[in-house]
Image (cartoon, rainbow, N blue to C red; front, side):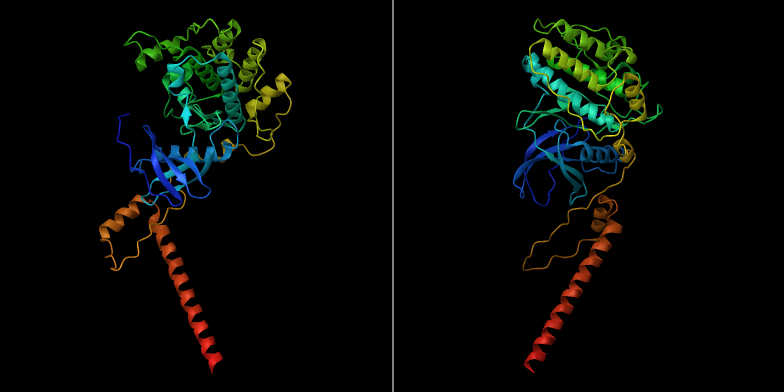
Length: 396
């Protein structure tokens, strides 16, 4: 995707713009200060061209998925979502001061910290899977660090339902951390491919590079990485403080054969916990909500392995999220005119039409809002008249 200039920060009611945080191919992220309650928040905003149905679809899906999963301690929290006055969808999220996007390349992360981060990340993915969802973009840059130093998973923009068919189109991928079956488009995302991405991410945090990246210049183009991943020949991290058991664990997670990998993100987390015990570290607990429904394939696997506590007790979140929804949703923030001495002229009809187009369904929404306003004015006028009549009657 060609690089683009970041869009200007929108004016949002109750939020004061502070500074930009980052810009990607699909959206811009800004730091705001919320007025009530007082706190810093990250606001993710689509570019001005919101007529792109695919961008809207991805944005809506991310908002809906986060709203259902962000209570998890290892998933970034979402506070609200809506449409700005200039017609751009936005999501207000927890502000995380840092991420692992660059840190793992600049310093050697301790093995103990990587193991702890891996279990927490696997807990988040396991929870998503039990809710019927796949993230499809697990990588170091999507691991944010909260103000309390805890890692949380972010960016569910290309997430999908576990019940999608093999004919589903693969919309996007991050090649260095994608499984072979995703690279050659045999799969649009599955539990097995997510286990691969988990292994590739933990490997990256340990090695300071993605698993199939080479140190030589000019050897890491997209197509070169793609060919190496399809061969899937595991190369050890090269760190003397990484135990052989952890190398074997990562090699299994990134097996070319999906069936040879760990059966679930939870099983991957358990294996990381065993390495923690081997190193004399306290095992990080697996955090999974007990009331999430397990998709049918999960239920069969759980029954076959004799696991308990997997009974479905509610509707699958994956079934609740409409991943095809590409409409502008949510109330638009109204524009309030300043009270000046002179009354401003009405905007030209062409300008009014442009704003209606930018707001998408504004022609259907604006008249209702005006009707409400007129009704409020009418009720107020009647109330004043009645009050005046009563006052006069009392005097007479």
